[in-house]
Length: 365
Image (cartoon, rainbow, N blue to C red; front, top):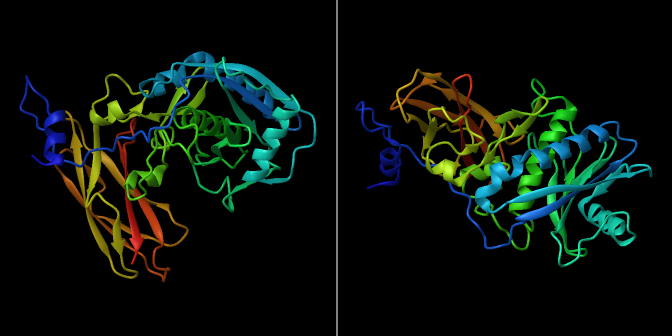
């Protein structure tokens, strides 16, 4: 039995009717690279007093820790406890620009001089969240940390201080129709916190992460907090949080948690499903396949450029889809690009509530 047929069988309905889930490519599971996670951690937040958003960010950090959101979405990866132990406010002027090495050195200096606490070997480790105001430009690997829409900031492990930390810059909101700049920063913080706990040393000892860049879903990000890009849940006093990827849910057709318990799994996948090599100026075709776990009304289908700062021409033969129906997707790169250039188009299924996605990725020959 092929993989697509196996997925169809797992999701098929039994009993009252003869509904059959259409064959489709499966969602990926995020593997463990063998590195440790931070099952129990104490959060320390730090920011500059000149940042008007800092009080609201500290309050949000309290909520994320106390609400149990992190353990709810990352419990299957072994995350069991998070405490917001301390918030530290720096009265010095915020720097105008920092690269990743300078951020690491700044964190180490705060720890060395006692501005930030350091955990003893017998205690749960600290995770440090560094908030930077809009006037501070953060770069990493030569790229501005606000450049990738919906993927602002980063997290890392400091080898000099042997601690894990996340860096949250203040960026223009990626989802401006929904989120304010503060709301976007809150979403980035919660996402990066989930990533840090489930993959605390991403460069040297990866835990839960997609490390194979040929996996199309790596276009959305590589970690538990990244792959449900643009799929939010509201909690508390109107807070938005991005859902997290669940390997368990992915095997059942609903990879993003928290999930609505009564929701019927549905979505799309592409054929070919793997990253493709394309030629400039030549149309490349994919077949988009719709599937659902039970009978349901048609849902909308759209395709938008997702990765790449160049023109991508996109044509879909159908704007609605359903279980067992297909749409033709055609991509064309109209202008010359260097060989090896990579990009992605994001397919999204939309029923007005849920927004399952499938990335179509390519490389220029």
